[in-house]
Length: 220
Image (tube, rainbow, N blue to C red; front, side, top):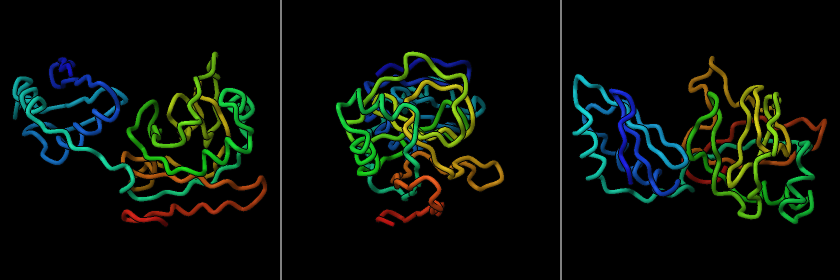
């Protein structure tokens, strides 16, 4: 683990991998060091922003190094069901990369509950982990200049839903009409760290059940 300064009011912790980041984040979030105002996890880093009027970098670093990481159970969060039409332009390529049929790609994507590990890239974009290991695929060789809102995608070990139209290089396997980011909603993002996601296949033209099915920890 490395702890690096990030400007005058933040530290960046580099960890071995996502599980280590989430374990450290859980420990520090449960017993937040004095003066730390924000914790931002990513795939291999944890950013700690602090109030320099209440603490300093040395004190925050000590708290990080003294923290006892907490193993995170990714199956305990609230559940969100996302209806998906699996008609993405990269579905055939994903099948080719994985050695699966297109139908099996869909079955693997819907057959496992995913968990939002962290957010990034764009407001409301959640990096989903914990799905089928058979769906690990590379990013596209060339990014698209425009990915439509609601596109459901894969890259590496992650899945995600594009909250708005933007450039992107992930493999697009389908789309959803569910609005995952809305500034007029509280909270604006449906895909927040800790939320579990279950993708549900729907047919084109079939009225999609757009309920945001949530529970306190069990299945919907």
